[in-house]
Image (cartoon, rainbow, N blue to C red; front, side, top):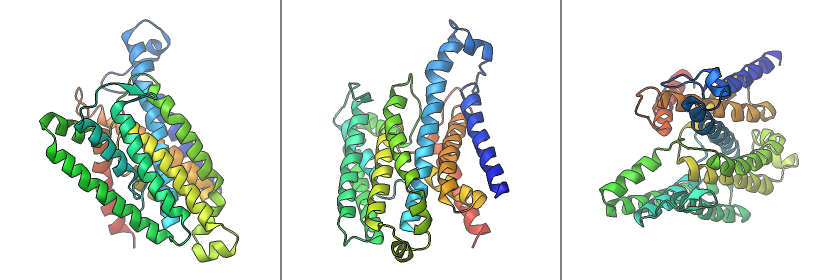
Length: 324
């Protein structure tokens, strides 16, 4: 137990290091004197570009990792992730439809018109999934299959819209679906913060129930777990967070798969510690990936979704080769 707590302490230190160091690092390293002294270009870059970007990465990565862990426990499937139920596909369909219709730069609720359309698509898919979850005859396995069917349907509609789009629209669609954390100011961070805080609060309140679900639904129900309530709350919390963050940063993959697996092997299966660890580890991991993306081919920028995908594939090959 002491070793586990020490590892959790190291993870917390890693998160703090990402928060402090990532805004300072890049193609041009910003010194502390420039950060504290107003008036310079580096001061503006730090406070209005790099720091909001890192805060967005910490929030989005923590939400993705916590949602991935909750879905893997709920569905008892190690390949479940935040996008399993088609929420991201619904968001992508909304964004692609907005680009196809020539949406401009108008803003609503702190989001661009493409972001608003993306959030509406995610909300629609989430409502359909939550409606299925509310019906008691739908088992967890059936719900998982329904989510996959929803994702495939949205993907087919996205391909149809891409086929009809011109070259400029197709480029915007593909670039949006790569994901990215490029923001100026704190508008996107403030939009995402309430969704992430509320969703994480719900998941953290269900840590005991998620621990019991590890033993199986029948055993958990015999020990007093309300399966319908837990299922509905997990879906509500995770879908709300995923829909909100995809509307801002696009569909960034593999964070909800990589981080829970690594931390489960490092800290054990107890959600009392594992869930907060995923919040810290997911945020720090995405901030680190974003740092790599904006420095490895500088002055150009590699979308963070590409970086996480490049890491995700080899990671699962390693997982298959080293574990039964």
